[in-house]
Length: 250
Image 1 (tube, rainbow, N blue to C red):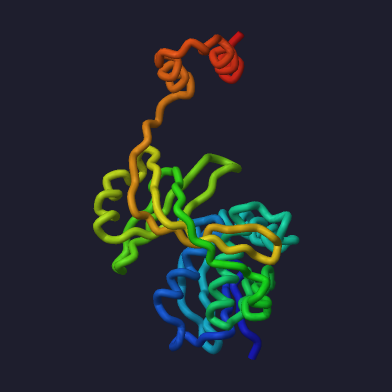
Image 2 (tube, one colour):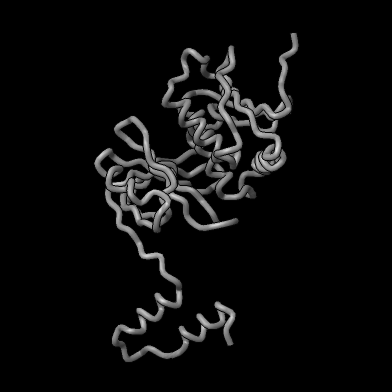
């Protein structure tokens, strides 16, 4: 009997697991990265795990489906030409598959729209992790979980430049961060784990937050005026002129 697919059904098949063997923590990671790939956190809904090879089955609301399909299809183009946020989400999913000795397929309805080679990628083609001390700036948009490593998500930029940083923190640091949810911009300090993929791009896969500080969200002109108030013999009107031009002044 032919398998039935609804037109708004989104199916991610992982050939290395069955529903009984897929760890719940790994399922959560796949769901998080799939949502980043699909570009929708409110219009895509988890339905169930399919039988046979583990199949993460979700469904999309009809109004959101065309944009989701367009986004996923664009993720299937040559790796070096993908938008950075798509490349990062695709890379994270494929990295999980490599670690799980698996491969994956994403379908929308009956159509296969994206392949994840996973274990078929030569291990030598992926370099990492390379760890170093880093900091990230952004607005805290998610915090919470029941594990010792608490998910902490930051959003940086707006519009086409918007990107998300997927971090973790211990429980003590998460408590300190919680009041800043959807608040002012913060800077988090910690350890970054970088991987280099076959396309030659380095991608941040994990960031462990060790400390943070809130940043003042002030207009650029005010920031410059504060700088100008600091005694310094070399200040001139160049900066002010540039600010005026940027803000549409004469």
